[in-house]
Image (cartoon, rainbow, N blue to C red; front, side, top):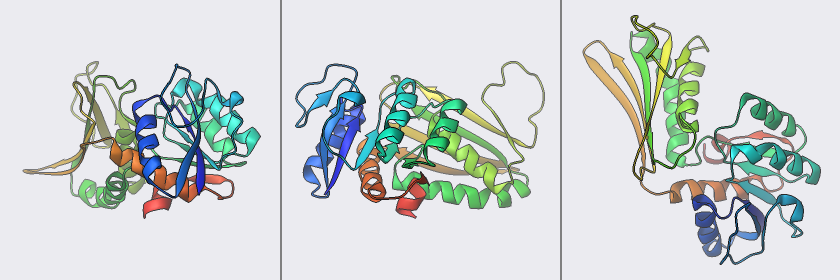
Length: 251
């Protein structure tokens, strides 16, 4: 059985992973961590990682970007593998994550769902063919009003997947309000919509002459992300140092 520490246990995803873990014989939440008061959990909850005394095999992180550096340092010090699901990390934090992965196993993914990770593969493979035929690439993502970062990590991952397929020659643009000019060819536009209780919608639009091809993913429940995080934790337990992704888990 894989024992996990749920970092950010009081959030929506933390609570959902807790529910899934209670029904999955492969895993057990040994302890939770949350800076906010949390009650009603079937395991001890601490205000910081430094207070945790329970033994565990993997940390699952659904906390906040502001807590990422402390989490990475703690994992490196403890030799604790971590599934890093928190989005909105800065370039400096991503560099910190890459450095930490040289000492301990880390799995980071902008999106934990099987469908999204399969879609990333399709985008990477399709972009050269469609862009070569004159198609422009635009990405539109929609999330609930409570989401803090924009654009979503998944939208950025989709843009990066397309750009990887295109040899890294394209630039990303998030705002066109300051310019009046035709759309450059080697550009990927990324737009964010926030409202209501949208769990997560992503459209990758390839717009050509007289036709449009759209790759879409709709999440109707956060359970798809929670189940993916659980699968990632089971996969990561016992792995050696390195930076892994959901592609290693599902593809």
